[in-house]
Image 1: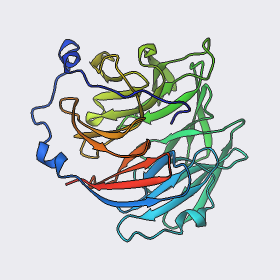
Image 2: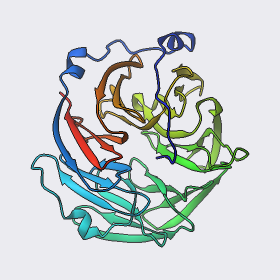
Image 3: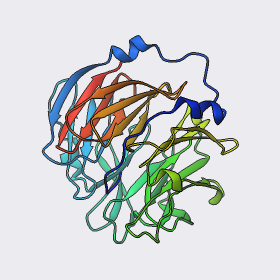
Image 4: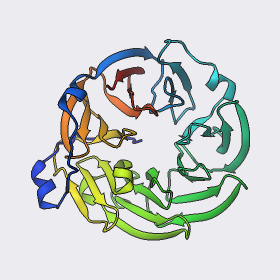
Amino acid sequence: MHTKPALAIAFAVAFTTSLGFQAPATPISPDLVWAMTEIATTDVGFYPDAIAFLSNTQLAMFNRQNGQSASWDVGSGEGSSLLEALQLGRYVDVSDDLSTLAVCTREGMVSIWGVDPVEKIRDLCSLQNTPCPRGAFSPDTSLLAITDFRDEIMLWDLATGTLIAALTGHNSNVFDLAFSPDGHLLATAGGWSGSATDADSCIKIWDVAEGELIVSLPTIDIGDNHAIAFADSGARLISGGIERLIAWDTTTWQRVYDSGSSYVGNAGIAVSPNQQLMAIAYWGDSIRLVDLSTMQTCRDLRITATPVDVAFSPDGTKLAASFFDGSIIVWAVP
């Protein structure tokens, strides 16, 4: 996610016109967004810097740095023994079909686990010097892209357990990775490692089949790229950084939306399964909901703690958020 405070994001509508953003015909109904209600809360007792739904009701919470984890059934309010059975290390990613989980032990061993039934599939690779590994499964769960939070991204074939590509080109920490919905592209977001002379601040787009760089998208004006996500079935790539939110057309790689330089960046972003709504965890006091058809804010969910991560359930009926104080809130999405 990130290692230092971020600033909030404001959405400047004027930029959408000047950059040529073309909105779909039907925006989200305001009634739908305002009908969202809080349905469940819990406290996990640790800092959950990553959350993921493992089913439409089961939410998993992780601390990537020390390997703490917990799972919670949102419907019953009960805890789950799934993560205890796995004896997980640090969370890396869960596959889109919810069948597979990648984790990294404190010693740096990346393992692939089946979720139902719970079983280890294979030990994949060993990472060195890895405080907070980042990774992403391809949409068909055939590949895992993983980085040791430094400057190299490794692309692994999960069927054979072989390394098929080592992607180099970032000169600093890689904060986030995302495959396009068709699995043809991999986006990797570089950031800041703590040195003023070692700023990367760019997003790189890779051809997955060839293992080659397609384009670098300069983002020095938005600061660290803490979170990236594909939207509109892959037609846009969205990046949230310390100072602004940017959207690119994935055909031309031109910016089609720019929130403008403004106050505070985000901690995490999530796109709803129906591609209509984006949730942004501010490093402030709200979860911001954005209509992806217009890129306008349609509601701020006010909260009392600092949010860290957000996630939609696979069926899109729930939005979960985790917070610095260890609390979790889930809202119903009509």
